[in-house]
Length: 71
Image (cartoon, rainbow, N blue to C red; front, side, top):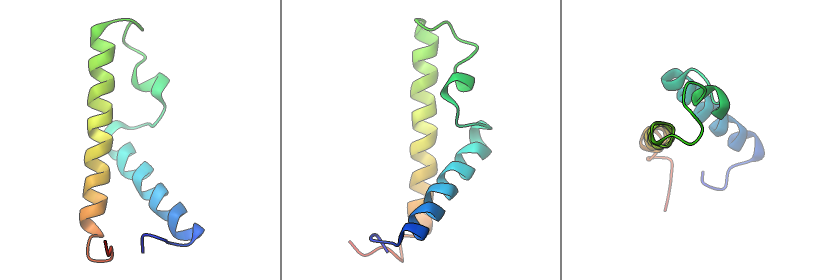
């Protein structure tokens, strides 16, 4: 249900976090970008990759639950 209870929303957020950690091991931005110089193009690209991974994780969750969603 898109208008789920607070408990449902917390469970969905936990799933997003847990699934993201399976891909990236952590959700801490500082840890995810620690090996890059702050102003480097490599760090910026790393951030793009992180956001892409997060979007993919979320897309998979939505697809898994699409039968339950009524738009």
